[in-house]
Image 1 (cartoon, rainbow, N blue to C red):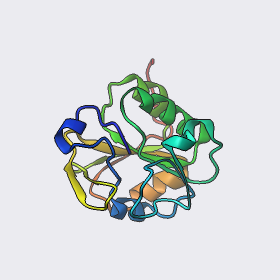
Image 2 (spheres, rainbow, N blue to C red; image 1 turned 120 degrees about the horizontal axis):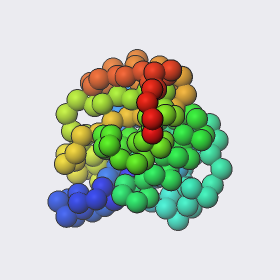
Image 3 (cartoon, rainbow, N blue to C red; image 1 turned 180 degrees about the horizontal axis):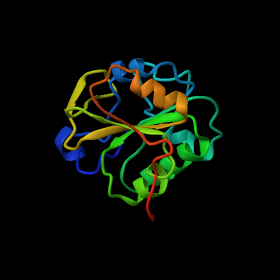
Image 4 (cartoon, rainbow, N blue to C red; image 1 turned 120 degrees about the vertical axis):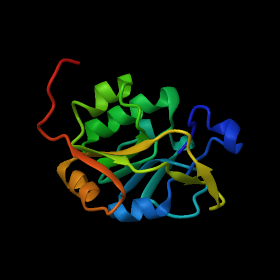
Amino acid sequence: MTNFGGEQSVAGTDVWLTPPDMVRALGKFDLDPCSAEVMPWELATNRYTEADDGLAQDWVGRVFMNPPYGRKLPPFLAKLADHGDGIALVFARTETRAFFESVWPRADAIMFLKGRVKFYRPDGTQAGTSGSPSCLIAYGRANAAALADSGLSGVFINLDGIFQGKL
């Protein structure tokens, strides 16, 4: 949703909305805990905005999350991993602490998206392409299956049971 470290200066905003077609390809979601204040389309049945403080709220059902980036990202990924039922859209920064704590040992699957995601502004107009590659991270086997069956272009990797190594 927000704060794509460095992207603000390019687009003049720190609110970058998920393309609605991407979310539709993944199925119906119950909660968007990182929703923008103004949304031109619904990503989930229920939503929390920054004013609601999604981290402080209870999460129920299947979650779709385009979390704030930068220092706010790790706690949102950790909460989704604890919740165990949802999909997150984040930059594919696989070397970060957030990945090593909340993705590699806890996620069920990742889809590294082909090309760069074209995000949107709150007025529904396209904001442009991000400066970094993105991925979708699935928590829960049903969400891993939704990623695999989504028809989105990218490389799907099933992580269930393949974690090895020392973190």
